[in-house]
Amino acid sequence: MFGTMNAWLEAVRFVNDSQRVIALRLIRLASGGTLAADETRRMVAEKMFALGEAQVAVATAWASGRAARVGRNASAPFRRRVRANRRRLGA
Image (cartoon, rainbow, N blue to C red; front, side, top):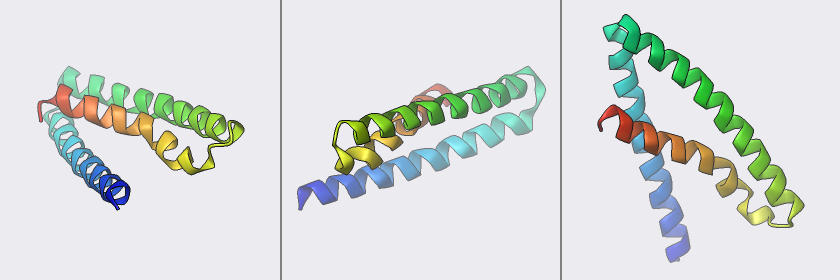
């Protein structure tokens, strides 16, 4: 029971952090200037790297016979980046 509850709470935290990062990034992009340009480049680059990390994590989980952990392993790079962006952007 607690495993399911923890997974649910982690999903809620991820969604909340994601929405916060999106709002903060939109504010930064709307302000324009070099900060907005830097943020745009950072966004695109980190999404590409996170996707690559997620693909490696999924392949590793499947290859090692841990199919139950595929979803968690695939989302870990995205969760880490969202958390880091939330701290960096000041939320």
